[in-house]
Image (tube, rainbow, N blue to C red; front, side):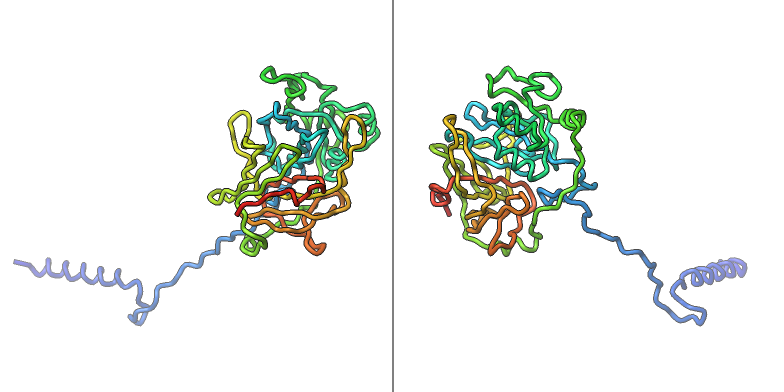
Length: 346
């Protein structure tokens, strides 16, 4: 049987339980809404810093100077090293029908770049126009004198040939296709030469992501251009949303690990070329502007190019056309046959 004392104890417990469960009641005993805890909204700010040649975000202010390197594209020099890490690569004819690359590095710093070849004026003029340090290996006397006279800040690998610090001659290739730049030593050597390796740059014009769907042009899956008998082919990979590059039938990849060159913009410009001596050296007009193709997101735009304060940019009606943020390859072709010599595939 339940005694009076036990019953009193039970009733007291019930009263305590009821009182504890009345969290949502005010002093009148009426239910009131529970209070919400004020929380500060989480701010998702846009990145503050961007690389000027790629338009891609940086976690820190970008103050490192652009370094441009003359890279060999002779068949005996392929595949090359370091091209996949370049922000922009310019491809122009040297002598004959063989091109060389001027690769500009800033957002990424490879360990090794090459093979490195000799200087030409239109390459070092480009480098100087972009305020880039110009790295090459060897030059004709009159070209070397131009550089020593102040045409561009430069490092000539001939003075550091196989020093084991700035340049190394590799045994798996024969000269002149075996001189490789040790990129991590560039800033140190250039500083010792009296060059400033910090700089700030106005960024190129880039598209916002919202503008990607508004890119004009016709759908093209492949575009092929020719330097003499050699072809350069760009294939749009829709899955990766990138362009892959081929020299003839050989895909352009890294020597060490076969990393493919993947591009967000392919910019093809036509301009007058002139052979100026019996060695086949050329003068290439990179100032006057002209017709151009711009490949982006699987489309081809038929526009113009312009030299804007030394930088080669795409324009339409003299207004800049934005690049897709990422890596860019610029092919410079002679006006004969010019863009008319390019083949396209849907």
